[in-house]
Image (tube, rainbow, N blue to C red; front, side, top):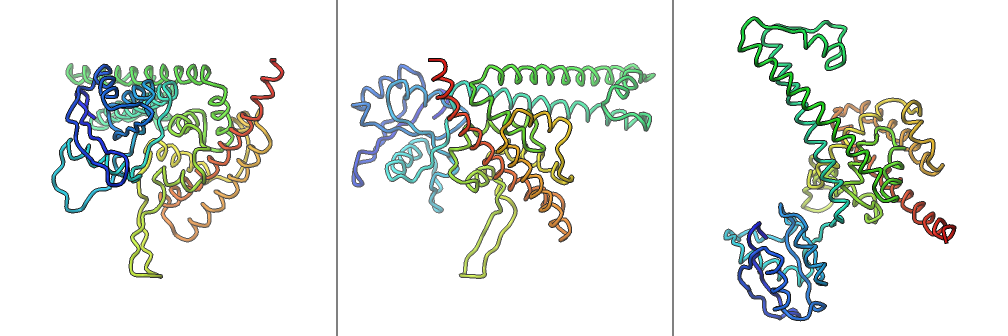
Length: 374
């Protein structure tokens, strides 16, 4: 699938059915509609295509037409080691053949509102990265010319910004550069604040299940609102994972392995990084909170006030277990980044447990509220 064209191939039913190419059709809704009509009865069709930059618009077109469709993970499509010819026609034929054989892995497709929330959260992350780069440019400019802030001023705090706006250079070109960099820092801060307000409004207008899941995940230490919204936006319903190990593998936080030659030959390497990078990033950031001793106070205590006892007890268990694991690994001489990665992987198990508990509580409360309304 491309922005302007779709390469189509068909695999007839049955293991020995013919697999043939149908050529290329324009990527337009009316052309897709004509293609479906040409292929036959809609109930007898099953369609797949690779996930890519064009998103899920083609998926929703097939759903509206009443055709079963799946979006497959391109990295999990079988590839022959000796195959050195790659064309759209050959890829379409291979997809049709592998899909008929059941060798393709489908990805989770969010609904339109959920996808919009995910794009908003990712826009906030992009704004945060832009803010960091703008601050770095300004900070390095001051460093090159020997301008140092007073030691008692915290970087990028209110007092630091007052000092920064008072800095002056004698050279016109240098002063113009400083003004431009400072304006970019102010613009990045305003942009980030605007997006965070938009996230609050989007979560406030989201379905009750999403709001409950965001609130429940904040019972965990290190998982504030932005992190919780990111987890929900990237994962959707956590109960779609049958076991927490599946969620850990999805995040790419599990170690790679190359074991051959029989028993005792296990060789494990670094983490696979083969999953959702946004989920992996926020989990590693949250894992740093577990280097501190277990405690419930301040903002964490406020976030847990309206939650059930089962959720808060799971969060308390996570604090003890993960802090003890952090101390043991550090004592054994493990590097802190390696330790934090291990903590992040195990924290995902508690995220899964809390998420499933919230979904269960929400599903049981929904019929009761409906009965009272009736």
